Image (cartoon, rainbow, N blue to C red):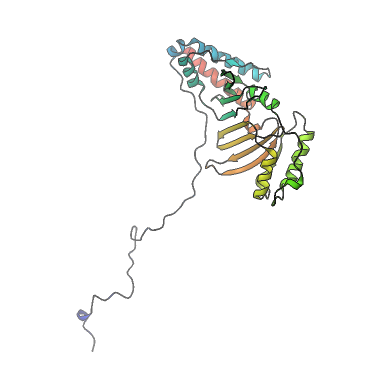
Length: 303
């Protein structure tokens, strides 16, 4: 005899679980982790120009800007340019000059070294938004003197002077017996560098060793750091990502490390060159800066 459906015990669990369908019906214990997209790229932004009457109250600022314009003309003609001294400006005029020049992509820091007869104890340089126009602060720790300068060129002339006069270890390497355990490929890299140090001439093309492509153990990297040493110059270049350039204690030898916009290292190199190209303003940059500065001066004059 068949059982009456009304007699079924509805309190018993249903043998097949009921799963609801549709949006929002499922638990969201797990979330999707998307790859972070690259961040924005730094691009040239025009300066916030002052009102003409404000510039008229600070005639010295306009004189400085015209001097920068003339220096750009000379630099493009291949002539030497002298630093433009601006440490005599009053605080309001200096603030106005800072507003017009802005802050560009490249920053340079030369750390202090006590008792160094060659150059200042400390130097800071910041490229303005006009590529190839550099704001340079030279500090002398002994006398307390601070010089505020504007230099025009592919790099600050002061930087080149200090780099040339920097004391170096020379071209000799530590004996092989001093190498720690685990070193594999560092000796061959150092032998290649030693050859460059001994035969390099001024004006030679850059010799680049790409460490990213080489199989290097932690001991290799540590031994390279030991043999190269750390110099006084640190250069940071910001654009699409960042580039960190640091001098070593070896002649014309730089560590150049590139990071993407998410601060992940993408390229690690050693460059033997007077100055890494990534830190220099190209001739095209100087021409663009001249055009943009001329437009700004014409606007201020016309207004």
